Image (cartoon, rainbow, N blue to C red; front, side, top):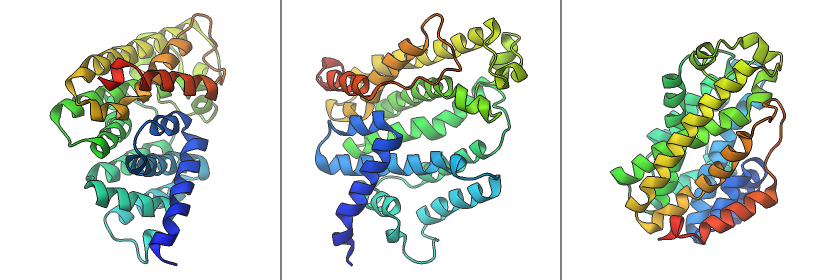
Length: 287
């Protein structure tokens, strides 16, 4: 079967993968033209595949092998055709059609090797470095699908990724703690005399709440900066940052007084749709 015949199946596969595992980003793609939407879905499906590796393996080595396959594929070293993998096929097409740089994609996969181990995140600087190579890079690549790269767009992407990534650390705390994995930096916990074992035990303490409040404050600062910089980038690229409207809503929801940080309460899909639809029609993201 030709790659042309396979393309609709690959496209649908990526769309389903993103819709099922990263619904906010899936919704954000609904507000861009179909050609660019296909490329964005390829990027986001690739990200889903990389992030899911830690949940699909019980030991680090098989996870490292899976991540290495992606970096080998991106460098053209995979034996046989990557076209048999629908996400790889769509990603390679997006790279070709939009001249996307391969290095940030490879670095994104490499950085997620950290996820395979239970080493704690040591410092805030280490977390920001991890998020810059993952979440910020994804914003940057999405923006390059919609408009030529620029320093101004990169600046927005960096802060957008830090805001979204820190929010994800707060939202994922219940799951991470259950696996004795901690993305909340040790430095932040120590600042508030928060014991790691209490976190792993699911104990809701004033110290943990203070640490999470500090993280939420960091996320809010990056969000505010990213939104303030949006008017400096072309209107054509702003849909790549629509996810920031979801980050803003979720940051407010997860920062509510009295919320149990160990309660897994994902945002409703209807609320997410509404939030992103309103943002897509607002001056903030269009003019």
